[in-house]
Image (cartoon, rainbow, N blue to C red; front, side):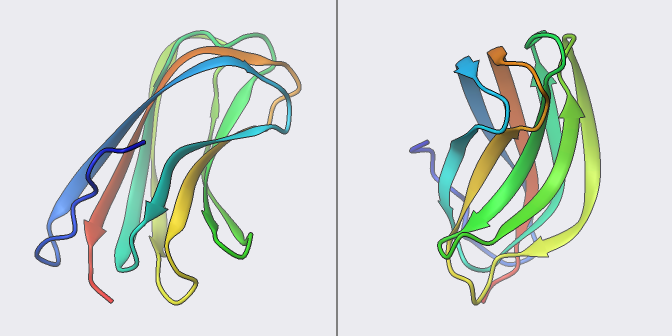
Length: 126
């Protein structure tokens, strides 16, 4: 969670990697993958590489601003090991302030195992 987030020249497409070890993420529970994504960031895609996290598990990657506003980026079935990616309609972090990258278990089972989240973004500027 303390990795440097690139805030350089506008327009460079970058990839932010976060590795999570989920011990027992209950259904509807969340965990913060990265805090305070900077203002001026435009998210363009999400990738996931995961262990088999358990029956009936699904992880939804979200951006949550400091006032609690949530934007779902992508949902991934994580019952079996694998990898997936999804392009998203660009999500811009702006006037709502720095936002957190959050992973929510939107399945009905408890999720346990390793997950790598790859957030594709470009620093557009504010």
